[in-house]
Length: 307
Ligand code: ZN
Image (cartoon, rainbow, N blue to C red; front, side, top):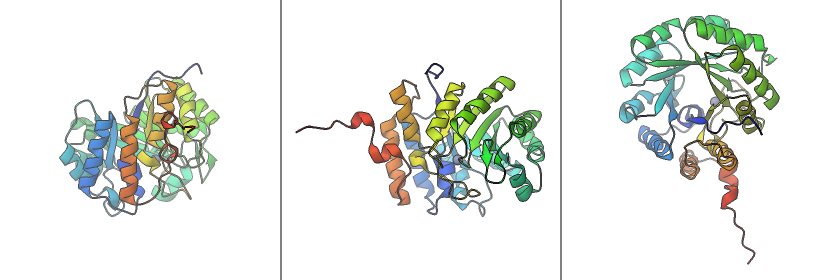
């Protein structure tokens, strides 16, 4: 393959996207301990939690306490998902320096849930951008279901463009394309990634794939071919999507690391340490995990004896 990058950056989202979908609420101490394990494994970007309303997402109600306990780690970006201006305020209060907003690319989904078009939702984020700037907090935006949604099928590229432009209009240029519905396929990923990179050269991009239909790792490879180098993943493949029937989790971090390690793509992350963390998460949550590498082990660890 000709166009693969020599290195990529992974953001571990298991503490947020993973744990927010679990019935078991992990104690704050346990989250902090997992966080320290991620730092030890070499992650330079971690999504620590979210500042949603605690009644809506009780799994993330202690995100403020987690941030207060961990402080800032030099050279590591710690981010949190926020719904609105209140989220920025909570970030300020607990020392979180990076926040991420989200909007659905599905017009029907957005109209049904918020009675607004996606562009109207994004234009209302202007107050979050302003407050973030005033408080020295970095802000980014995510677009969920930019490839497809269960409401409309494949998402038109023009719709994605117009949401990207709405983000840029409020001053957000770091954008995540987030396939929460797990409907993306590699050729489409390659095309959309190539398109946005060319059309919006001032933007920086993250890609976030769920493995609902087994295509997440192929989608990452397709995005890499199109020049993308920043990806979310989740230890043990934890995660889901409350709006999408039978949505599977995020692509598992160890599966991505295995592909990169065996393909000469640097990540700076120790896969053995991540596998240990994922096993620990599985036993804390007391269920099996959607991770090929945890099931089968690394190929390089298989040395079968003939004796
Ligand atoms: Zn996700």
